[in-house]
Length: 393
Ligand SMILES: *Cc1c(COP(=O)(O)O)cnc(C)c1O
Image (cartoon, rainbow, N blue to C red):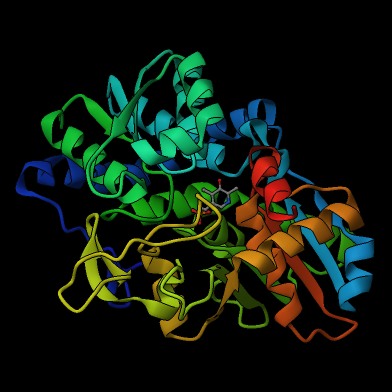
């Protein structure tokens, strides 16, 4: 049994599990029993892959970035999740979960969102399937991410602003869980990352694993071998990284480098570097590293990137970090913004601020000229233009 894979009880090492209130116990265990059967079902696979191809636009290109490679003295390929429909990797997971929801006979979809990317992906698939959609979003984020709120509304979703706590992602997630407790029988909760009670982290990782499935094929075609020397990705909750590394977890020839959000610096008090700063605890239904004070109160995370400011981290990644299978670097706001401008000027690709953290980690690496690096660009930067331009004033 691989130490990096999930076990029968829903744990990755000591992390994960399903810590849910009594009222959700039945629907979480129903999901635990259903998800693998559905995901492995040939007719599900057919429908899922057809939509990934015709609706999302997969496979996403694996692009050899020549000028970026020259700068860092190795061969850098970019996995272009930014080219997906709706602009990020989140749509892969949203499509998979709504197909599962339909097969389980659920009528109503709820979701949480921070920056709004997962909310938009969920509202999109609900429009596609003609299902009711309610998205919980912290009031602070509703104000900060106005365009995504308008997109969700146009797609027919109801956006519920959350006014508890700091009115951001953590509070939106609490509210979504509360809704789920009130409607456990007819409602499916589409979680946007590799977080939440088992089976969500494993389910989301499997749905995103199409990323590494494609990397294998594309590398074989372009490099004559199906594995890279390095895989690099940013981590908020961990879903684009999980998809990137999924088929290489047990292949120790492949080094894994994950970039979390350092914010203003890990010792500044304004950071979202959960793996560097967190202590083991339980949040939103699973055990992981959490940014908390001595009394176990959650510390409000900070990052320039709204998609990375979550106070926890997926249990798969907590385990990979603890076992040193992955190297985790904290990349600060200024490094991420600089890396985003660098990619834009060298390759003509404006990355999402989240993805820019993975790019910002390149500077810390020491590559050999023969190294093959695959870095996932999780999303496009259209939503971040104001932040980029204001930062550079
Ligand atoms: C949401 C988001 C992330 C962070 O989420 P993960 O689950 O860690 O992938 C990263 N990049 C983009 C573009 C996002 O929208």
